[in-house]
Every structure is written in C-alpha cells, then in structure tokens.
Length: 445
Image 1 (cartoon, rainbow, N blue to C red):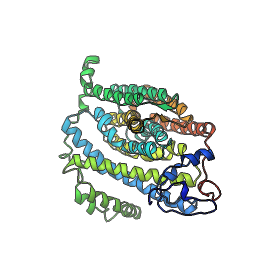
Image 2: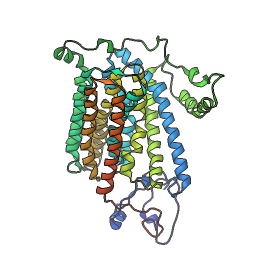
Image 3: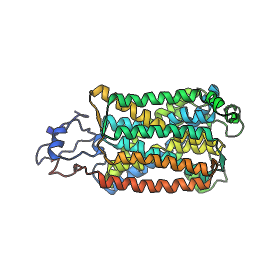
Image 4: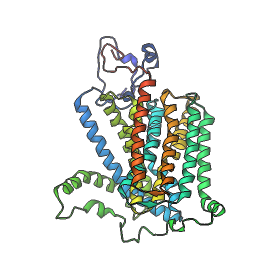
C-alpha cells in the first residue's frame, strides 16, 4: 500500500525505492539486527539519501518555517491573546503563564505527539527538555540584552519558578526507572490543573501574603483602540509595502516573507474581527509548521549524522521555541517584563505537565502498556534543569529583579554550557546502534 509496507517488501539482493512510504512494523527485523531505526524513517520518504542537496534544501526550508512561525506569533497569536486577556480582565503575569504559555507551547505538544505515537523515540522528550532550557535562559537573554531594563515583580517570578521546580522534580522521578505508568502521566495533568487553580486565585492569595502588589499590571488597555502598534487588518497584511526610500535589504526581506504573509492572511481571520478564531487557527498553523520543522530538521540531522536525541535537545528545541521567544520579546519591548518571564517559565510548566503527560497517558490507555524511555542521559539532563532555573532566579534576585544586560548575558553563557554538557552526556551514555537504512546489504537489503 502507499503508506503501509512491511519487511517482506525487501528481499535479499533486491533494492527497491518506495516514494513517500512509511514504516509500518519491523520489530522482529530490528530485534534480529540489534539496531534502532533512525527517526527519519517515520516521516515521508523524502531526501533520505545523504547528500549536500538534502542539507541545503532542508536548511532553507527550515529557516523559512522559522520566519512563518515568527509572523504567526507576531501578527496573530500575541494580538489575539491581548484581546482575549483584556476581555477576561487578567493580569499580565497570569496571562503570560496561562493562555500565552499554552498557545506558544503548541509546537512542543505536537512534536511530542509525533515522538510518542509516530517515531516512538526520544526526540519528543528531548525537545521538551531542550526547549525548557531554551525558554528559561535564551528568552531571558534576548529580553535582557535587546530590550530596555525592566523592573519585575518578585511575586509572579517566584511563584512560577516554584511550580517549575515541582514540574522538574516530578519529571526526574518519572524518568528514574525509564518507565512511565498511567498514574504518573495522570498525576502530571492533575498537577497542572492545581497550578491553574492557584493562578485563578492568585490576586486573593497575594492580598493575604503581602499588602502591595502591582495593580498597574492589570490588562486595562483595549488593544482595539490604542494608537501605537495598532492591530493589523487584512489589508495591512496584504497591501503593506516598504517605504519608497527603503533600502535594498528591506525590500528583499519584504519580498521573502510576503508569500507567508499572503498565505496567512488568506487562511487566518484578522484579530480585529473574530480574535478567538484567529487564536485557534494561529495555534493550528503553529502545530502544522512544527510538524514540518520536525520533519526537515530530522532530515538535516540525519544527513549531518547527528543523533536524534541531540537534535531534539538543540536545533529542534530552538525551532519549536520560536513562538515563545517572539512573544516574550514583543511584550518585553512594551515594558511588560513579568509577562515575558512568566510566559517563559509557564511554558515550561505546561510543557512538562501537559505536553508530556497528555501524550503519555493517551498512549498508555490506547496500547495498554507502559511507555519506555530509552535515553539514559535524559534523566541526568532533566535534573540539570534545576540548575538553569536556579541560575535565572538567583540572577534576578541579585539584580533586585531588574531584567537587564547582566542577567541576559549570564543566561546566554549558562545556556551554552548546558548544551555542551547535555550533548556530551548523550554521546557518552547513549550506546544505541542505529540501523543503516542506506546500506543495500543491511536492513533494507
């Protein structure tokens, strides 16, 4: 069949090429050869032959997908979230930790569904772990270095950091025996529900704990009536052009991203109309682009001979975190630093409790068996998340909760150190023997 082939299709000394084919079930052949299939075989059969053309094409496509993700976030997701939060009269920090965090975490949720049900490997978990570090350190670095110093309220940062540490401790406990049971996955979802309930009573809790809190952080400005950074309509997306005096680079950048602008404008309603529908369709677009990103970045990693777990920790994690970076940078430029940091940390809490817990629970209920986690290095890597969260919090504490360049550069330095240590652990501890799918005399021979 077109999407269903088995090992009987491959006979000795007979090589056949099946375009756009998926692997169906080869567990017996894999066990006999004592090797693990690379994640690329779970995606459509495209550019599996290693070549420089595949590297160039997958790199260019991935970069353009990053551009589309940034446009979706900047022009649709964040403005729709602003209108939603204004309607619900939410504070900036709670909005960043809930709706904005959940919306921008759609790529991680989708990638982990792919990793759990399609590739059945560590790329989903590796992406969650890698994007968690990326969210905490890189977002703090970008906001601290490229925006004006912002005074943060200590309460929401402390609150979300505490919940994030609870999420890390829970994940470390679950990964300790490399098995996930249904009650462990269900406990993740219950913990996130408890987190949301606590956020819903946050202002009342603040009134009990402290006498003063930032009332100015309340979303009291209607995005539809503001004069600066007005919400874009359909014509603004389709008909807008650079100024006549714009230079060549500006016109080139407009020409590059205009196909994406036109495509999104024709498929997503303007946030000036039905903003809730705009938000839903923006999240769907993010999920679709994330699948394509997972596909083409897997092709890139396969051609560059990079292990799947390392791809998840580095490139794929950064790619799926583009919405968080863009949205946090946007709100930080507007002076809402608490919303940016709470978006970063709240996204991580959502990633661990929901993006991991929900796919795991569904898989256990469907297949009636525990989920096995293969990579031994990920347990140690997950424990290292505590260090990254502590570094950011202590950096903010030392600066008296001022998000500035010192905290920004400190976060970037520790993110580079994390990548070096995590990738080294994966190389040293992961002893999987990957099948050579290009060898005519091997698995596909």
